[in-house]
View 1 (cartoon, helix red, strand yellow):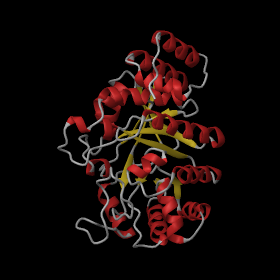
View 2 (tube, helix red, strand yellow):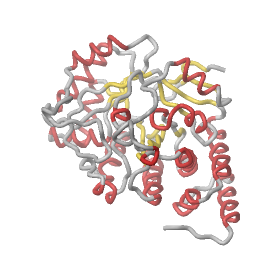
View 3 (cartoon, one colour):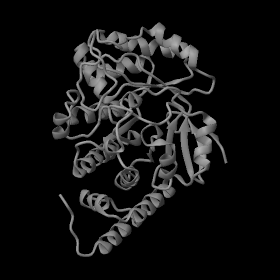
View 4 (tube, helix red, strand yellow):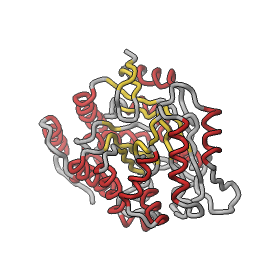
Length: 367
């Protein structure tokens, strides 16, 4: 759908007035903003909303990414990470092997393990529980943020347990929060075209709903820049906004620019800087009940991340140490940043860096 207006300036002014009054934007409003060439007005509105919510503070965390297994039954068209059982490069680490990796890379400042991986049907659900339990026993001070909504649905099928039973067992083992992945685009047309043969839109949302009901606070992503329509992006945001109205369990929204399968792919296979800034700003305006919008440097690079801090973003993720999923799909950015680099990045945008924990409790403010 294309919004054609004789007076686009009038429509932009109407949206400015709605934003200033704290009124909720519609999908039609969002579509106009996606199609408008007035990027600076869009950025100014998003920056204004963010400044009201967070001031000049920009958050980051000292974290490590861990990947228990890359074996996966799903066949998502955008993924370069997965391997089939027995395929060259396939792996499934034991809990002891995971801990051995952590021992070699962890330092005292790490506050979070960020864990995602494949939907590996060759191991039982207990494997996934035991890995969490072993990590929590070895590192009780570190919050475990693990598994996507799609992985939780997979665990339910694998084990024969209900979603709530799966979440409860993982919580008892030491799980602190769910990651935001597996959402991709919450559209069944998209999921069919992209072979996202894992949790449906309804199932993904229900996993997070039930997690919130059990006391988890979770994350939400959107993987944009492939075959989805602008309406589907905006409907994705509305689904999340509606669930947030219901549960208030999401902490942050993370727009993720899709990565090509090869690091040598041309720039025509990548999202533009214009689209990245526009999507972050529109996310800030549409998701009025989310506290934070994250600019993910792994997907858009450090310089655009810095720019995003004036387009509505209030979080730059974390140190990561060694990211694999986006880089296996052709990301050109660094695999991780140090605390000092993140502080430099935020200060370079005339913002105040704030080191946080998983739940946005402030640890250190670098004024």
